[in-house]
Length: 133
Image (cartoon, rainbow, N blue to C red; front, top):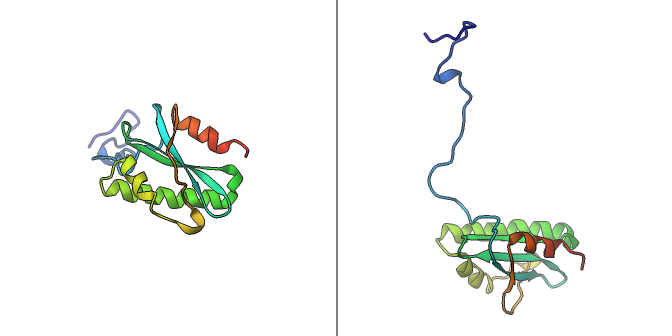
């Protein structure tokens, strides 16, 4: 039996359990330090947030507008679920956004038509989303 200087048992079963992820990622990266494109998401009443993406970084996320309140937060959950599904299907971020342009999530909005805008990184998109209207 393995005992340390204090007489306590030391071995594999005395160590803290540590979980480690193995294999590939399960979703798009949620931040991006390089240039991103973004689209506005709105329902019939409000701009809810900004959906940003970068194919080169395999990153995409929804930045909710604070001014949209709880609906904006809930929209973020709904769009995150859409992004996770797109990732699981093997779509690149731009392919997912192109598909989402045809999707209406009702209260949680749809992508407004028009060309994507460009930001230096995901933090800039978050700042735009948080700015007062």
